[in-house]
Image 1 (cartoon, rainbow, N blue to C red):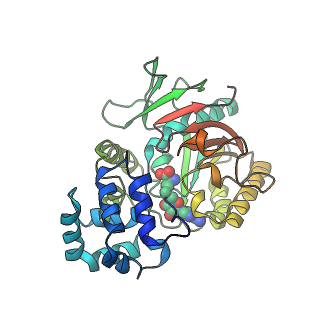
Image 2 (tube, rainbow, N blue to C red):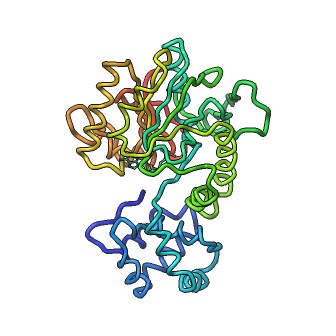
Length: 347
Ligand SMILES: C[S@@+](CC[C@H](N)C(=O)[O-])C[C@H]1O[C@@H](n2cnc3c(N)ncnc32)[C@H](O)[C@@H]1O
């Protein structure tokens, strides 16, 4: 999620998105957002929306959802004029809920070693699960490549037929504790303010629209992950993660090792909510032996002393990547879509 740069207004937000966030991910979004930043009439229209609805990714995804094709800015501008009312309705009714199954590649080593240490299958709860596609780490394939062209470790789900599941590619560095096989998952459930439904074509179209236009490989991975999830749809509780977590944990089978995890969610919570969540996880750890895996940008991790930055991590080290923590302890730096994993802890 790209935050609005302060103290600039909407035009600066789009300019920042077009010069910092989009380049390297989408030349089209870079051009469109810079075009919008220099288009005062459009900025005026966007500023009629509530502040949290003005974010570039939401607006651009809404345009894609309605059929905007990769094109030069003047053509995109004509598209916006022709579809403005529909676009506003989409922006006001939707939010950025990108569901990236690729993040399972970053989570898998931690999940596998919890299962191995516990000697039993896992019960997974993902908070901020979107459509729940990260709840199937046992049903995806993996290809971990060490270094520039080092040894490749391939993992396949038990009994899987090639082509029936996505294969998640991940470049590794450091002593990543790769397992021999994905862990067994006995039960899986998620919580989201607005769970997306993989059996609803509109929700699936929205998930596709949230992927940057040129990133076809991510759209293909999304489709494959949705097909996996459709074979056994996830249990998703609607509501705030702080309100729902304890009740949902109560439904997990007691003979499975409970793991609560999240990726790209804490940025949506204020500091009090993050602290409350940390306290709830600590309670579940004490009562239930629950494990906690956090995969988030470093500035949003609330530490035991209440501070919100992991001291030894800074922007220069993370470079837009996520910090992976096991029970509050940093163990790795992960590519934001699970495309890389640098292990920083001793194994
Ligand atoms: C960027 S998406 C990430 C989805 C998923 N974790 C992934 O990695 O693909 C963030 C999700 O968190 C959800 N969310 C934000 N605040 C929440 C809250 N307080 N309680 C539950 N879900 C929340 C949003 O609705 C959204 O679906």
